Image: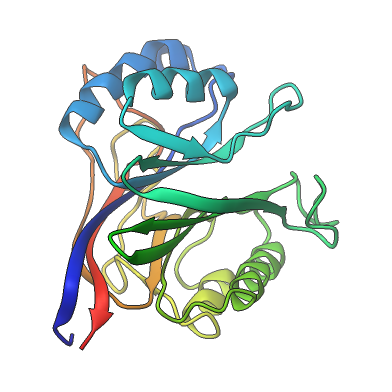
Length: 258
């Protein structure tokens, strides 16, 4: 890739938290939450997108992460509501964000007819040292046709922003494999790359630590940025796993191309 002027390093993570009200026995949130303290002692990405976040989970994480702000929490929210949250280091200033639902009425809580749940996307605009990043975090439903519709909505939403110099990142649990219609929508019409492109392994493991082949958690990117590293965190913490998904991390160089 061309040398970049005034490049910045940026680290990103995506993780489905596994919602805190689930009846998971030994893997319940109360038994898992202290593992995040150890995890965040080892990992402090600039941005991370989390899915299936209940309010009390968000509150716990905020107490551990004093150097972060977050966007995407719905207040007030219905009982059992699950948010898609973007945590960002405070040095990355958020100049605005929006929430939209995957439906024909995206500005109000709603869903496509074939979607099991009302699904949403959080989009934030961030700046640091003269560089712009658009960061999106989402959680797709299950049917491939609905996933494709949802991906099209994101691609069309991004076309409303006229900032060719911005780097764009999308994190999420897409409930789909890389050969799915939604993935193809992102990588063809949306011109995105995925950090594990061509070298996939399972990100969903159902608290077993075993690679199941279900690579459903993606970090997508496009714009003036170069992928430096990528990894999944497959190690247990304090004798167990953070979630039924492995955290996925990536690091980029971003900047204006010469």
